[in-house]
Image 1 (tube, rainbow, N blue to C red):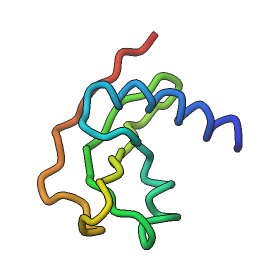
Image 2: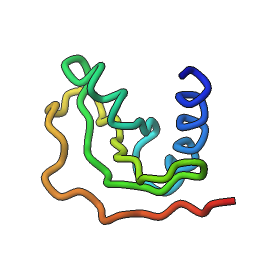
Image 3: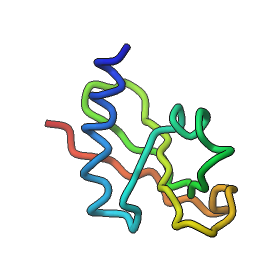
Length: 81
């Protein structure tokens, strides 16, 4: 399982250059830490090695509410190599 987690994190890192969030994580991470950190829903992305799109979130700046933003971005395909 650790291999899959590292692979997903590796595939999500380039999204920090597309979206205005320095940290982007998957839904699984948000479930584990949502009570402690505020996240904004970005949308779903296709990742290499995954058959289904992954829902991703951006870490909001300190001092913002914990709920995800009400209007997520549309599905954003990530180039498969």
